[in-house]
Length: 208
Image 1 (cartoon, rainbow, N blue to C red):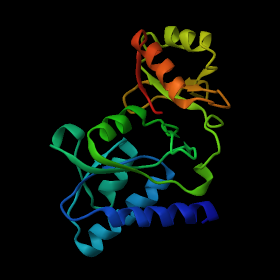
Image 2 (image 1 turned 45 degrees about the vertical axis):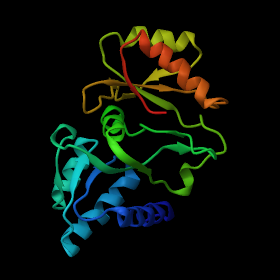
Image 3 (image 1 turned 135 degrees about the horizontal axis):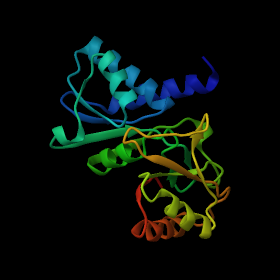
């Protein structure tokens, strides 16, 4: 295990201490969350902890089920007490970029429907300024090239995320467009500008 993995494991184990018996818990997606779900599975097994997990991706759902954690979809629960998820970059003002793992839409839906949200990260995710990590957007395929053009004209340097010359698809069968801005001087202004573009495009979700 690398030093970074050890840090992720530690933060994952610390995060599950906030989960109490009877809770409905949103389970995020990503490398740090994997350690958290492992630690949660251990509590379920060793302590008989009774919780319901609401996963934000198919891979998190499979991991949770394999560990004996009961899971339900967001439409099968009447509330979510706490969602624990990772982040890709956080600045000193605790503004962040999420969605690098490609679970954009599900993560956002679960987060919006949660009473509380917790981000868990290791020190490598902290940055003096946002932007060196590309800002991901999830877009439905239909109209995505028109959206791409609008982002390009706005100076956001978009790129479709590709693997082996194929579009990377989310669990909702959508594309991912990464914005390579290098530096984001005013995160709130960028967020508002993207929202304006969203109004006229096929965008589904942006994590910002």
